[in-house]
Image 1 (cartoon, rainbow, N blue to C red):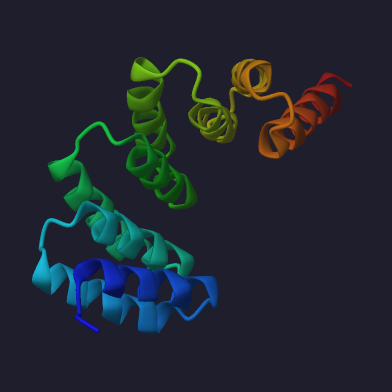
Image 2: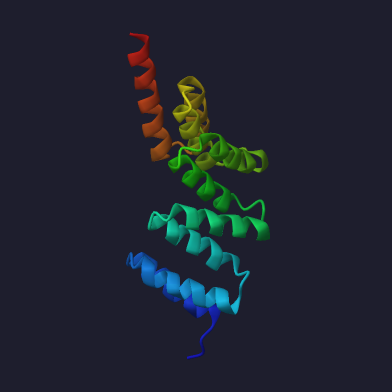
Length: 159
């Protein structure tokens, strides 16, 4: 069987499904040696770093991916989620805003923006974003649970 970037990517994905992230990284590296600008390999390597909680390395991969495709919604959302974890909420919101500017119906970007806004202390505005996300995707678990939590926070603060 001929070694191709796609074969290597497929194998890396199988390893990720088995949660063997460290070995998957080796396959992503092989792909990137063969094709340094392989967007799928760059993004998936970033996701793998994120799964391993190597957030700085994941951010580097996402930034590299954004140089190739600056408006990639998945990359922007992933980057925003890491910035959120690192408590860089304003930067995270900026990533989500880049997605929402092009796709006002991206429920994930809306919900994630709500989470970051909530962490910055504006629970009322966060609720607005959770409701927007739910108006697009009624069964979106993250938006549902976040909305409930935010409403409970508001209730407890108003007592």
